[in-house]
Amino acid sequence: MKTIQAVTYPVHFQKDSYQELSKLIDAKNYSTIFILVDENTFEHCYPKFIPNLTTDKRIEVIEIESGEINKNLETCIGVWNAITELGGDRKSILITLGGGVITDLGGFVASCFKRGIDFVNIPTTLLSMVDASVGGKTGVDLGVLKNQIGLFTNPQMVIVDTDYLTTVTDREIKSGTAEIIKYGITYDVKLFNEIKNNKNLNINDLIFRSVEIKNEVVLQDPKEKNLRKILNFGHTLGHAIESFYLESEDKETLTHGEAIAIGMVCECYISSKLLGFPSDKVSDVKEVILSIYNKTTLLKEDFTAIMDLLKHDKKNVNGQVNFVLLNDFEDYKLDCKVSEELIIESMEFYNL
Ligand code: GLY
Image (cartoon, rainbow, N blue to C red):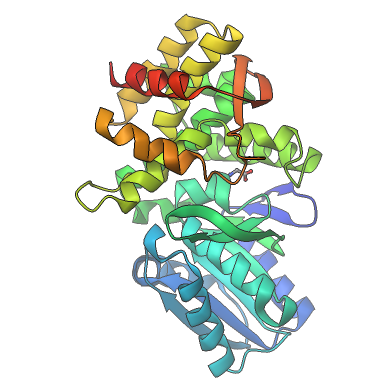
């Protein structure tokens, strides 16, 4: 079994991991095992998961509705009520079985219930395998503002079983790929080049390397005081674009990765203007991204609304938007201030 040791918990890979989960459940003698799913993971992932769980403890499944739109406090209240009605106590454990919404919301719910019960993340999408389930960030959105309410809190264990990826759409796989590209651009250009060259890509290796990188970063800076900010590359503008499409009733919602991919192109462009990030590398990033994702033309008349959302980014301090930019691949500069004009210019560059 392959394992990566995070600060207080292991990330286990593939099928042998479930033995570790059963050992944990025995060792901690939990009173009840709650499994948080959505309608999709209940139908497609739960049947794959449950035969692997060897326990005589009581198991209760709690289902929430899928989608970022449900990643909010109302849903948390529903889950807290369900756990309470089902007799949950401090010795309960919550297993989150799903994508980023389930692992983010589930970790938050568990950490607040009776001042904290244990939880285990079992991510079922590429995005949650390479990013959301590892690193201790949990939380929910406030209206369209992403992850405004949340905690740093660690699971007991993460299990990455890539068999679940057979249950998700190609669009979801592409969404997670954006985070792998981010690790490549900011931390390990070999990873970016592998995706760029698109030859003999092994998804298990890409996931393992991504988790290794994320873990290396988080171990050095768990509370995002410095280095961890590189994991926000592409996310400052990307989150604003994602929120904008989420709240626009007449537009199709973008996946997280689609929005972050646009954000990375824009932020590479801004980096080239402010820090001299080489323009051929901006073109490389744009080309790779446009080879994976359909182009979303950002309308000029929407720029103001996107800029307004940017002003709510939780990384802002004293009303100033803070960007992580790049001097070069693997060479970052934190807390960069960027003018509104340049941000708009970067969106126009993406549109070209
Ligand atoms: N998703 C960015 C982080 O975990 O820091």
